[in-house]
Amino acid sequence: MQRVFLVLAGLGLSVGTTLAKLPATLSNAPKTKSTAFRPGELWYDTDGNLINAHGGGLLQVGNTYYWYGEKRAQHQEEGVNVYSSKDLYNWKYEGVALPPSQDAQSDIAAGCLMERPKVIYNKKTGKYVMWFHLELKGQGYKAARAGVAVADKPTGPFKYVNSFRPNGNMSRDMGLFVDDDGTAYHVYSARENYDLRLARLSADYLTATPQDSLLFSKHQEAPALFKTGGKYYLITSGCTGWDPNQASLHVADHPFGPWKPLGDPMTGPNAKLTFGGQSTYVLPVAGKKDAFIFMADRWNPKDLKDSRYLWLPVQFKDGQPTIGWLDHWSLNFFNKPSARPL
Image 1 (cartoon, rainbow, N blue to C red):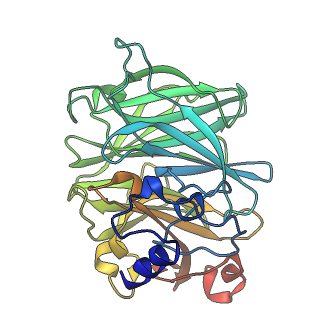
Image 2 (image 1 turned 30 degrees about the vertical axis):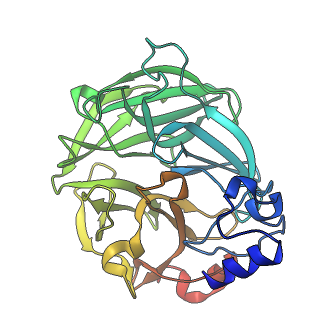
């Protein structure tokens, strides 16, 4: 508070001055190039605006990464944003990849919820395919549907295709995973989040096939699936609304399991609450063998736009993934032997 007062006084402004009246240099961050990740701190794009991409996931196309996430206002959801980056530190805003529809009869009419967006590329069709958790306008979390949209470019615009309950199952928090052979999977919370299921997608990635299996019933959500060393790993969270809770790690030799629990992968201070965050995605880092970034959201229900991002490196100890807290770090971290599987 003292530092804020001094800044205001130095500009000849009173303490009661609103943010709207502040100079642009205070409302936006300096446009300096970042060279490190700083989990939980304000993260600005290359235009100096706060990155607004919550519950998201990343897609690599060539030497460019694309970050898709929920565009949040203070309490409302406003579609899916997309950003691009060459280095993972500095992100350029590319626009709204999928906005709500102005057609009141549409499933994605303004006022709906489009959460946990993930995008994958289909080599056979040449389409970028987005899946997301959809809740219909005015129905709270009753609909529990999966929504699908497609685009010809990673930045969109994405065209809404349809929404459904995969094989008749409720679908809320979700993720996508593409295996080495191009087979894609949809992992999702079902039965009021008491079940976690996995469905193999159709060849065009637009629908779920009947190959759909219950992984386990442990009241889990926020699934993040990744693969290394021939093993499949799945990080999930408990279900406590916006409040953080303990993470869980499971391992399997096949996407459909059986899945073996490995406990909590988080280590260090506040690890039992996932450092105040909730998993959303695990990113393989290009050009670095067995290097992964754990992505999580530190939700702020009083101002969802101000929910912070927790990006942390995945380490391997005794052949098992672990995630410890770091105030700041860079991709050079993965050059350390401790970051690689043993």
